[in-house]
Image (cartoon, rainbow, N blue to C red; front, side):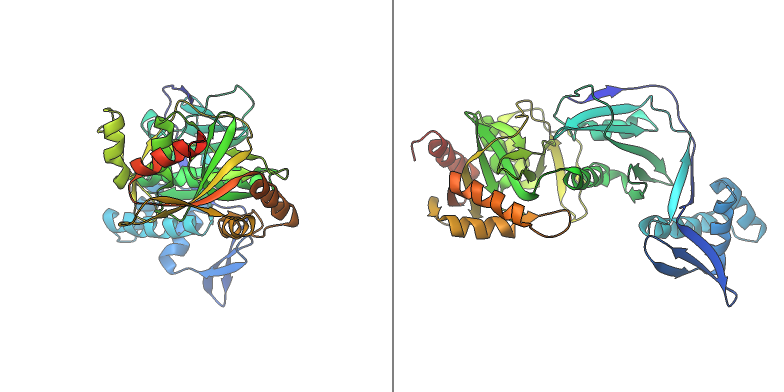
Length: 375
């Protein structure tokens, strides 16, 4: 499980212009140039004042006070300042100075990467412990994220140097999305698949499907049936065709909450988060996690239908390859020849099926029979 360390400090956070952002006057008009974005952004008079104040290490209280001297009430000053700074955060134009203490810390292992999250207070950190189910391996920090609250929202700094923001109820999904991207980009694997991955008897099962196909719900069913959990969202594919999951806690949308309550009765007090797509989700850490690479014996493409008979339709290697390529993605946006060869190894050694189903309980029985050799 994740290791959490708590302390008592509460550091002050100060946002500042990013090192690659330059303020200039062009024909008397205030602009910012972003070297990273390769764009020029024009500023109005208010925005220019706020930017120059930040560049001079002014605090937000200082900015509100100075705007007050210019006849702007504090409520309006806060509104203008927040709007400007949110826009700059979204464009990667702000960094921050921090006296952040490491007393509030969380560490966890994820696909052979050690994640370290540092927060300004235990309340923020508590929101993120639910994301992880992999134990802390005691290695040096690999990916570091710093999280703080700012003006009734949350900002976090990744080790890529970029500051991001989100609402409080979107914090866990935002951190998960960032860490997933970092793991994929930092992995030596050939590419990744949008797939849930489970292991039984030393061999693997991949569940592939579009969002809403039921990967996470069926993963919950199969872990309850004795499968080892490896991940419910992204599977990394090595050049030799072996697979490693990214074992974040299982992400369950509202349609799965009833099933979770049936399997376990400790679900009502779990915090609910809102993803960028608007979906409400809860996170379920799984205790029985498979660590390390595995080979796939079964590749299942999910086809959930409201009404229809359940069944497994065998797929040949070519059809399976085409479907897997559709769900594959790589850091550079292209499937390489090495990735193609890895897919060929997977589909040559695994049995591939399309699973048509309506209820996850029926699909569970059919897949258990398949993996046990009864189907």
